[in-house]
Image: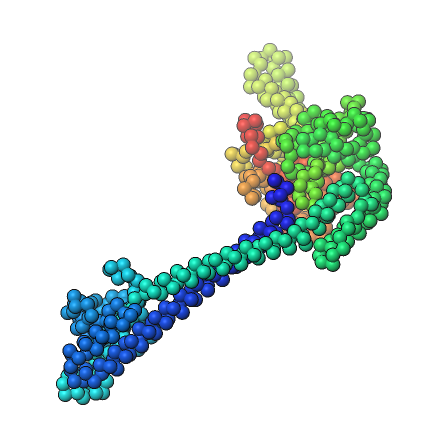
Length: 634
């Protein structure tokens, strides 16, 4: 039954039959309406002719004012077959004569639908077509009738007549209303309608039978052969040919099908060779490749993946991809929300080898879809990122080295204070005086200051596991300034802070974000010192923390702006490239901004640079606020 419903022949036949039924129905309805209009036009013309005959027959009697003779003539004409009654109205709407005596002296509303055509102005008009003066309705006794009103116009003879002259302003003296019976017209229409229905039904049945036979011979049987051929081809029988010799489109389709089968047969070897070639490419790739399904189950891996992780291919196929990620990293890339419908990312993450070794990789994944957009899988590429990790470590050490001088100077001052206060205490002991509590408190205060500085430096210098957790950007900035603020003050740099106290938390690596801040602050210091060799009111570094919403996504914006040397527009696009530096040889590694860009990108953020040479440089960092980060950081 289902196959019958889905058959193209059945669909074609049904559509054809419906079109034919609709077409014959429309033709029948139009023919019936045209016939009805023709009959009604005949009745209207007949009524108009009767009105004209009455007016001509009674014209002389009207001039003589012979009312009885006029009424007798009208009464005789009203007895003709098809006429129900005849009435005469004067210009005020009063019935002066009617073949139905009960209507005499009754007044009609001149503003009624049948009268308003002529009485639309202050004076009745006689220039109205017969169709506009006719009305099709049912009388109170239920009979179907047609009324035609004919104006009795004023003529020259009426105006000059001695018996009843009228003023020239009266163009219409009254109207003659002829009521025609439509019972015979209705009977004729019913008979015509019945004959028309039989004719249309017979024509539809005959045409439908011919159409079905035509579809069966020219469509159903050839299509059935083509369907059989497709099944044979699907089963692998590429030698099968469809035997249809017709010259129409279906015959051409059969010939094309046979040609396709021959081409498939000749191309089968090429396809197999192409598959083998593709497999060779995948096997020879220097980057790791893993293909997973919608539930993150590994479907295919290349040789590089096995070599990188130390697994055999059979150990990975059919296993969840989470097994090749180091603990805590799989959840970060967004593959844990099953089933996956769409995936596209590029992040830095860590793989876990079979031996337990952690391998830093640059991971990218994208959804594979067919031409119809249906999900096919996810291709995951990974590049060994050891060199970038080493570069980041080198950049970290470089930033640490730049901080060393400032930190040493900052520690030196409290140490000198501790030594001085300790010497005062020794002097008091030697003099056997009471030891001053204030002196001891100052020693403790300065020692705490040294401890805080060293703790911040150790926190920045210590290598930690790269994990993202809810952090407060304000805390990261405070830790950064704890290491750099003294050096900024020593160099005469004015620090201006504008911090929103209600900043939400973000997901990030505290130490990596701090490294970005240190890199940016050090670059601003260099630019300001290059422009201003000593203290200057314009030697300003301003830092602003605020919330910014872009396309309904909230971000924490960290903006560093300095009035330093600026960056030429010709090279501003290159400053984030690895090993590109605007500093003289020996004063920069060219890794600071490149590493910072990589860190911010890994945090799903954005970093932009705006600068005018000789005026200012503004570096803006946007870090996304993710749901739940605020509660976790609280």
